[in-house]
Length: 303
Image (tube, rainbow, N blue to C red):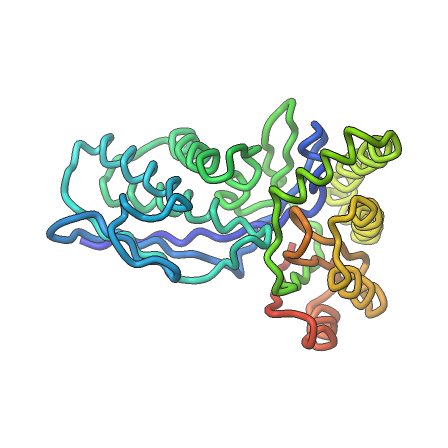
């Protein structure tokens, strides 16, 4: 018997970095990007095949510790010792803020839930997924896991947790991969040091945090122009923290000069992706074509 489960990626629209300081954030599924987890029995040893590692699962490098936890937890619940092969196909670029680790964690948990016929509740599946994310990242808000598990935009608050927004903005998101791996840990540390030392940075962080409820209200009202303005304001503040790059700045400018409502980095920064809000796929494709010399990949997602 073979079981497969496809999990999509995610994109943070607003709340990058400010969510660390207690402000709200909002993310959307990136359904154009998927990783498929396939579970099948083998005669001996638990095995894992990924684009970067092929070998025994439980002796895989430390970066796969989250997966090891999920497999151990799920086989313990199933009271099963039979060896399995876990295979990952599809592609969500790593270290771009696109939710690759969350998609792997959620997809693995779901695939094993189906393979073992455990019938776990949604809460149980999310608890395992989030714990794996904590192992992988050291700290996780739960936003990534909630978004890769959702078909809708997800609003996050440190006070009330996650909330699905079942409506759509009615616009399109262009995702431009700079080809440069972001470094969330380095970026968060850099911003924290500035925040601790500089009063003006703390004021800027408050301004950044206040954009999230404005953006959410505009999103629910299908007001793409206001959402785009929030993008541009957020990008100006994030760039002032030193976590933008020349390529990110150039791509934001290109998008804004060619029909985007607004553009910003998404995720930790210091590389990663640029997102641009556009009225339709034609404008999105124009921006992608103009950016081809500066990007590794690009996708368009309806939101």
